[in-house]
Amino acid sequence: MGKLSIIVAVDRNMAIGFENKLLFWLPNDLKRFKALTTGNTIIMGRKTFESLPKGALPNRRNIVLSTNPNTKCEGAEVFTSLNDALTACSAEAHIYIIGGETLYKQAIELADELCITEIDGEAPQADAFFPAIDPSVWSEKNRDVHPMDEKHLCSYAFVDYIRR
Image (cartoon, rainbow, N blue to C red):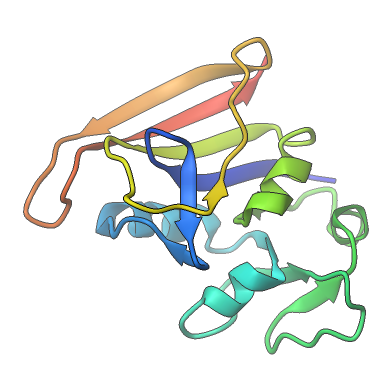
């Protein structure tokens, strides 16, 4: 297996979503997501795939996990387990786990890197959360802080962690 990264945006309470939708609209977070994942492999759960407005993301290998082996996702490969999906990836692949909650909980044990957008705000409602980032396991590699502006209704930081 190649390099395994997790990419996610979290609020102050580690919330990541509500009713299968993102909590905040941050254009720069979406640009960063595209820049990091384009040309690489992305792995997501079925509900995350279904939340994508146009289906499979272009210029990336899309892999969807579903416990139902008969699941079909146009433009994506479907596997029934994270292990099977990772085994199907080349040793040179850079793989990004893009959600949701269940997959993040599985993958954080295996990941080499976390690419977190820390949003300086709290969503009014959330039903999906990212697991706690254990400082004994993860070391902050860099932090890029951005103030609130006309396109971003709260400040945020791009924070990368590497496994200790």
